[in-house]
Each structure stands twice: as C-alpha cells, then as structure tokens.
Length: 177
Image 1 (tube, helix red, strand yellow):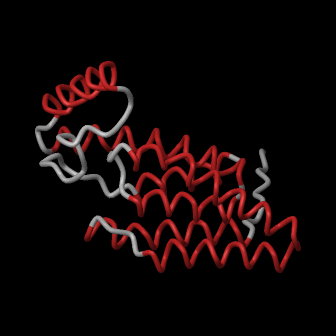
Image 2 (tube, one colour):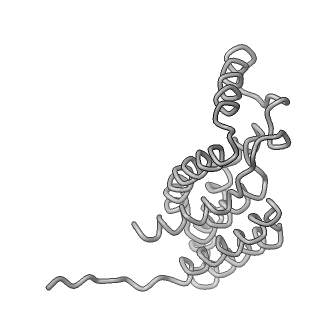
Image 3 (cartoon, one colour):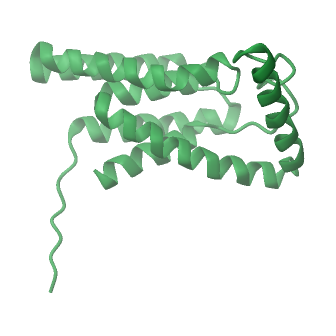
C-alpha cells in the first residue's frame, strides 16, 4: 500500500489561490480586474511577509511582485494583454516570490494558449487570428517590435478573461511544486 505525503499549504499559497480565484469573477463578467484587488493583494503580501520574515521576507515579496509584473508587461505594452492581468501576476509574485512566479507565469502561458485556441474556435476566429499574427510578425520585421494600432485588445477579436489562465497557472505551480 502506498502512502502519499501531502504537505500542508502555507498561508501565502492559500492567499495566492484566494486572490486569483477572486479575480476570476469580475474578469469573466466584465473583462476587468479591480485595482483594489491586485494592489490590495500585493500590499497584503508585502505586509505579511515583512511581519513574518522581517526585511528578507519583505524583499522577497517585492522581488516577486517585480518579476511577476516584468514577465507580463511586454504583452501589455504591445496591446496583447490588459493591465489588470499584469497587476494580478505581480500580486501572485508578491505572495509566492520570484522563483515561484516564474513557474506560475509559464503554466499560465500554457493554459492561456490552450484556452485562447478554444475561445478562437468557439468564435470562428482561427483564420483571422492566423492572418493577424502573420501581419504582426511582418510589421515587426519591417518596423521593429512595437504595437500595431490596427491589432489591439480594442478590436473585434474575442477577448479572454486572463485571470482564468492565471488561476490555472498558479494552482498548477503549487500542485507541482
């Protein structure tokens, strides 16, 4: 008979899951994640880690926030992702630290790709998506990597509530750790 040891989750891990699940509700409904949630979660994480681990805990939390924001900021700058998604990943980083947020971002990206394909298929958008990606790559080849105003989140493309992939990526990271 096999026995599996299950490690109890830490307060920071539970908090990160609560935050990403809480972000899913407004993001699915309105495609917006409230600043009060993202900044509040980051501030709570920094306060918690500072109070429980001193300056080193505070620094790890701030570093996690910075890494989480830095990983998704380029997609926001290129108009492929909303600011709330960037701030949510930063909040996850503040709770989990810089190394764990790297894994969370990787698993989030994988989940986002799969869900994005499903959303595109559900809306009959695959052909347009391929043409848009081709146009974007061609534009970048000529003009350098920068936003192409004709291709942005404001267009007719179906939008993905990215808090859902962030939640999946965060949970997967904690499950596989």
